[in-house]
Image 1 (cartoon, each protein chain N blue to C red):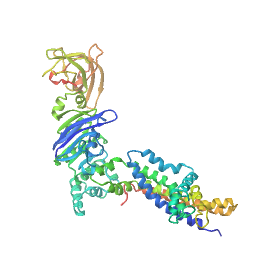
Image 2 (cartoon, helix red, strand yellow; image 1 turned 90 degrees about the vertical axis):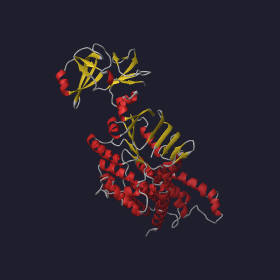
Image 3 (cartoon, each protein chain N blue to C red; image 1 turned 90 degrees about the horizontal axis):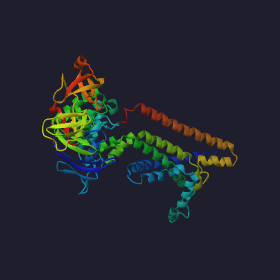
Image 4 (cartoon, rainbow over the protein chains, first blue to last red; image 1 turned 30 degrees about the horizontal axis):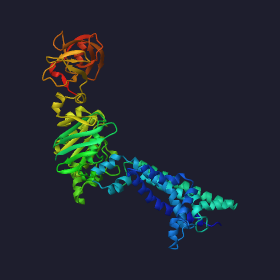
Length: 225
Length: 347
């Protein structure tokens, strides 16, 4: 009987990370869409973790949160360690999944006809109400797609996680790192089991998203109520 | 409510420099596409910011670069009817109206009912915009504008995306709306017919400049400028210069013409509308023997392209009834350009 803690830790980490990513990604997308200057630089900065090797992201996280890092030293004053904890696993997952949420949300915002937003403005609707009642509902599909993509990315995160959170069974060992450990230990049975779980789970999530998007598509004009 | 606009804005290809005032009337900006008409509307609405100038609506200063006033669109109370109507796709028609109406829930519902009735949208309250026809969407957009507290109505090419039958139907609906609406309305269009039928005064716009503001009758009788002449649909224009004794030379047509009225200071162009030619049996004043270059059959008339016989001058377009042409149908004949129908332009 294999220890199922990696499944539990993976889900817990991915859910926590997706929660943060969801709001941060949408907020950043809205911010960048409205930026008049430095838009390109800001976009590149947020997107960077998506194109960098995860080990580079992990390296930077160690640099910042490690015992000699700026934030790391600050946290130490409160007896809080960060590296090799669950919090580090969540942070790594947030950093690598954020670009996906941000980019899909931004794409969805930019696809909305600018006239619709301008019409709302000329009709006296505040920017805040436009965001909640016009922008978000009409960008729903893109935002949902971003949510699913960033969740699956967070779930599959390996490189940065193993550098900053390590591979401590029962604490920071996720399914991805468990597979790595099992292969290293020539434990094919365990590796196969986790590979199967990850593949089936990810497949199911993406299928579910497609199904949901399709049923929504057929109801365009029916819209949300 | 009077709208006063005097703005400058540097655009990619030219500088927008417009100055006009609109009282409680339908005022039209007539210009070719890309002349800065829509940009002018966007500046008034606050969607775009002019580089300098003043925009005032009644006693309300919307924009004043010298005093650093630039109200956000939300505070300008300018109703903007977009080309594609821009209804919120995620809301029903009733929700679209209620969303922008002010006041308590009860007042909102009252405004919704009132405007649904006013624009004959009964039965469509709970439909989503995607389920409505173009005409219904336009009426819903009007209903939404009037439910908000708009003090000015701006219409941006309201019929540009429609086929001609639907366009005519909507145009009549719009006439009806404008008759009931007693504030100032600003219409932007490149269609001379639309502008002539709907508006009281017309400003001709070219390359970001307003060339002339006229009543519609003045403009179509005497467009004064080349842009105005072309935009009002005159097809025959030639460079021209004054000779003497009330005569001018239309250079591109190779015709020496006499004209009525005062001599313009700097005559630059002469024009004549295609249906003003007169068929003659022989030579006479302003009468020329012409040869046919091309015959084009149009829906209800023939367009005959003719030039001065035996020359390579520019062709003139003569629009003639089908029966009249079928009776004539020859290669050479005499045409008269009535002096009182000549359009003289100084620029």
